[in-house]
Length: 130
Ligand SMILES: [Mg+2]
Image (cartoon, rainbow, N blue to C red; front, side):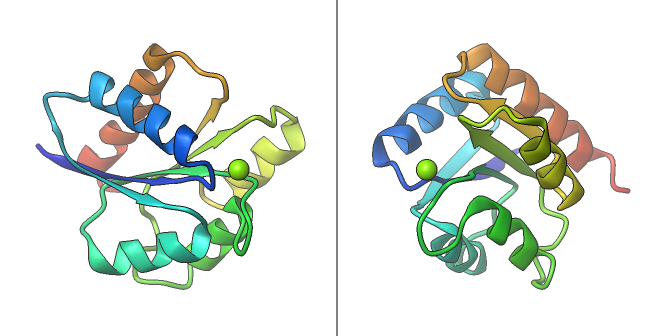
């Protein structure tokens, strides 16, 4: 199995950090890492590439992570696993994201090992079609 990952974050530095951790966590299966600076760019990237898993920030200009989750269900990409990466740990944000279809949560700052476990969980979902 090979996976392509899309990292959505308005911070280029954070995209690099997340990308590096994903490369460490999924070296054996990772093919491509794509990047987007906000939800709108993310939707455009999804139309261009075959993306397996999306890592998405919450606070972004133009289209936030929550707005992206809402927009995603109206596209053919509905159901793609989205893992939220955020500094916010408030339960309300987590519950809202999960209710909008997010499959996991990673809190910044994170350890590479945490990313590894959420990637593994997301992959299990990919391998087990609902
Ligand atoms: Mg942000």
